[in-house]
Length: 135
Length: 236
Image (cartoon, rainbow over all chains, first blue to last red; front, side, top):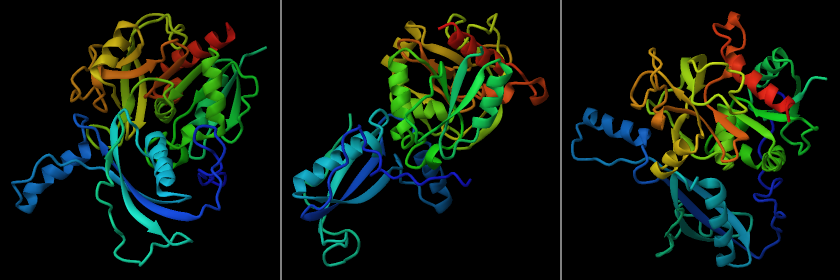
């Protein structure tokens, strides 16, 4: 379709607030883990689990399939960046009615969004960096 | 003068033309509403059509909910305006919190595209008032994420307050309450195919009434729902 437009989240502030200003002094990378809430049917997890006998695996159960979203936030401090991620996770990345989320701090990244020191794409997952979120 | 009814066009909507056509058959003046515009053009009712708004990325309806038109639709709904979300439109309304619950991946994990029967629970709503008698309506479903979910407390409250508008029913007209009943195409809890908000002016419906708008299409039962909306909008 010729009228297809890419969604530009910066063009539409989430809750009608003004778009956060850029030009912050640092950048921080996070991972948001989104999982189906306990008790919510997860047909993907069930399908994976049911395929395991074909692999000769009989001792694995309670498979749940979720989603991991990585993002970099320009902000003056890690706390400020984290607050942005918290809002995004709650309002957009997860649906708190059916999903929980946990935020993992990967670490500070160099300007331009490149991770300091490169590495394996995991960075330093800060201890205590995961909080249970959602309701 | 015929009543103006808007149909939102998101990038990825694919039932907008069918819905505009069905509205014309019901005697309304159909108006296409572009998703980037926050102006509803003075319409008397709004339909969010089926499709894959914003590609269904993240979750179906999750990104569409933040479009400029949805801010206008939310304000319109808060003022008592009639809003009907069909299929993907239902998913958008649920993500926006305009109707309760969520639409999960179909229990079968398959995209389901076939004729189903739904029974209106009440005939006095703006979305069912032209149905006439309480009878099963035949129309297609076409979705991958249509399994209606809400917690038990919410489901009880919805039933108590008459906010379940439609249920999937079997050949005998009995609600397909077992989620694995083949008459329940997606595993919806309590066979729910359509619900309304507390005020009763916003409704979500998973099957496609606009795809059952003429006998040539195999059924014109959907017109009872479209006509209900148009008559209700004209009466406001």
